[in-house]
Length: 260
Length: 318
Image (cartoon, rainbow over all chains, first blue to last red; front, side):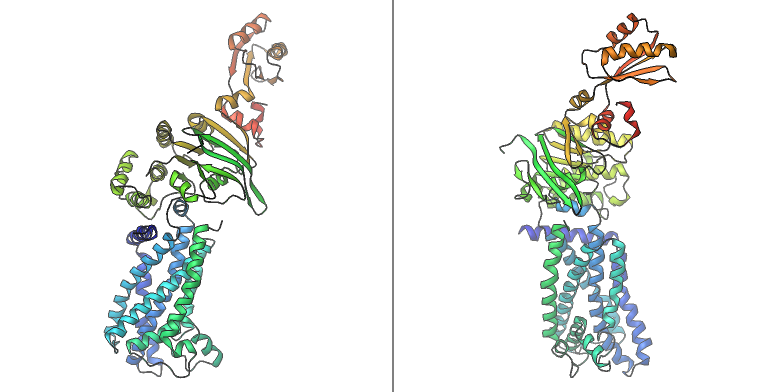
């Protein structure tokens, strides 16, 4: 096994142990979308033009993507927690791969959040959501969600490493809940005023949400949308590729130099 | 390895914006010795350790650690060193055992789990091994820090204020561990606020002031630099001038008067001045002597005198 793979595996183990000792944040971030599904699905759903059952089918993919987008917040919080404590400097004085610390964090995040999709999907099934496409398309939807989570986590890791304190990271991370509100995750964007609709459709969350709805067969691709939403799978892959290509190297470099 | 110095630095410089933290740091630490890095706050001790442990890149100058170039071969340096201190610590979110197992894996220690258990045992942490490190007392935490630096035996161990805030029993445990390591041939670079600690552990001392080494040498050499303090207590105030005259002849130093205690004192760097001779001369001159002492300087005196530390305790030695 290469040094990078070995060190990353060791760091993945460390992250999983940390979560085992202190599962609070994980439980909170994974139960929140279930609460939102029930609230939005039954409270807001009753006020929308769309019938309630149809809205809940529409909402489940949106919540899956919004939860994946929470990777920014979790990534920031975890990276800031490390970078303002002495253990990070000990890692930097060890003869280990520079990229292993952030890679281990991103890998453990992926393992945990993939497992965390299961309860949301089960509650979704209970309130009327169904997989209406093929099994292969459903697997592709889950894989896309994982890829998107991975991309979001790297944005979070970079911001967390750059943040002044754990508290600052917590506050800024908390503010990211606004991102899915400016997308089609919770509502269709068709009726938004022109400029807002354009902004929402260029939000990566919209492309991924549309792709997941399409792959699960829950809702058709909307007509006349911006390119990433009109071609949701290609648009999502392009967004993820760009975000990872930008933020992964920046985060690894930031970690390696420690801002020195 | 070609050099016999475990740490050899020349002209290391480090700036943080306007602050010139290191202004040409020259250090030469022989293999197998313990070097104490002393200096007032802001002298550059921690910056020096961070540069020498590859955490900060120097702006100028060069250094070799265990024969490896600090800037060009950072990974070779990292393989050769252990670091423990205020900044490089363990993960409070893991248990003591998990911490040591993790560091053992990252160091590629053969039989990582067994090595972790050995170290837990050696540092009396076996009972607490399953608890989160964040729940440890200061002394336990520092022992775990030290254990984590000793997974594979480092050629050079950097200890940044290893006993700050510890109770005397915990401090003694750390001291003993450092002595054992030095006896095994590990080179130790130690920064400390406690001069007694440097006096106890260090073979050599480097006194840092404003980012460079102001004085260096063994504790005895540094003490000899500033001399001993001779003090006599006389029976009544009228005898004090007479005592001062004799002291002046013997030491050549400026006399200090303590009128409350009827004491006169003065600094001497004359190695032939002994207590019996001091007493004989004073007695011969008819000074009514009650008490006399010839106190070698403490490292505190050395520190205060040689670093221009702003303090009103200067009168002890000046």
